[in-house]
Length: 370
Image (tube, rainbow, N blue to C red):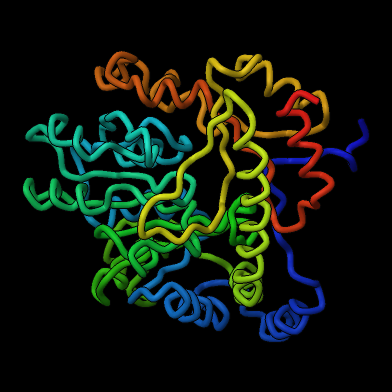
């Protein structure tokens, strides 16, 4: 099948080039390409307003933002996290010399199970790093209770959550810090990019120092920072993208509703239930293949690929199965039974604003076995 007929799990939304050109011309004329220039500052303000959060600090990508968030809060020792995520979640811990401790997930939210976190706490535990999986809220209340009882910090990997809300607030408002991703695979993208959301000006200032080599001014370095800054081109794109985000999420909602209708009639295919008090952003559309389906998960995955439909098994294998993690006691399979069951069943199907109903029907027909 030719490439133009292939359907991928996501395609990045790009605004009309004409909308971006005035900003690019201003950057070209100013020669201010990076280092927190005009568009960077404007984008931070616009994001804070859109998300309804106090402070946003932009980054070149979300992995650098995760690494910096841990540095900002001076996290050390052990951090409790999930095995069911993209590897950057745990990698950010290793890059900081922190021991990841894996805990099983909740079967409804697919996020870190707050009821199991307490048993994993040791005298070396300093923080919890949950993930809002597929943009769905983790148990933020349960997680906060545990953190408060034991004096722990919470850093949310909120990479999937842009535009999603829980109890009337952006999911980025929860925890001590939240990290967003603007990678091309996300609902909202700046090609690459990310951000840390924080709650006070002092914390933002420390984050901003850390992402710029630790410079406080031209001759003063106050921390061993890195180069994590978002450039002006990314920021300019982000400002234009913000004008389209409502329409993008609305189109994703229509696609998700069509999938919901189709898969309600297929035995052995499970979908996620809507969570209470949650307004989704439809960032992913996972299905779960169980014993009632005539094919095992990987056979269906292969059948889709043969038809030019490139879904993804997000998240398989588990992070805890990779060589740098699997020798840890918390990676033992018998302690992560829910995560293993979900990882062995999941396929994320194509969902993006420009997915046509015709192409979506191709996906449904393959899953249906037509």
